[in-house]
Image (cartoon, rainbow, N blue to C red; front, side, top):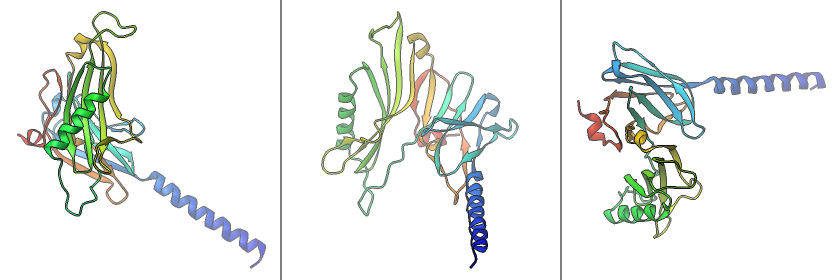
Length: 245
């Protein structure tokens, strides 16, 4: 094979590689669903927690159908649906499978042990509310809402620090420990007036969190999504509550 032919082959091979890479880069996914009371919705978006990139969706007011398009694949997304004074927010409570052939749930003792460790690791906030501990015998996800209401350095009258975080625990052997390569995922961190915090209305929903888009499944339909009540509070609703009509 002559040098000229070799160079031509390399050129075409490189061009083919670039075209394939470009095709994969251009592939995106879509999240769809239908929301009740669409006239109350002020915005719908999906957020990639790994880089905090947010993608706005479109809503058909008549049908309640919504879609969020242009989502890069091989990523997980949480969906956020806003009303005027409230938010329904997806949270990813999924955990890896355990090493056991038959999956085993967390025991009451496991949950209590994890709650004790969580409270022991939170020294700054004086109000620590554990919204849920979920998972299996080896892995757990913990959703925490916490507030520093006591005076802190540089604080003004009536000022608080509010944080909502997702922690992950694992039990490699006999003891539950906090996952070291993911200290925590900060969902909210705000320094605000206590009066403003008391007005916040956020309902977390695991059914809207951890939506995985891949080349094999580039479209996910969330089905019917019921809007939560708008009274103030930071809460997690159960799957049963979300399914009520």
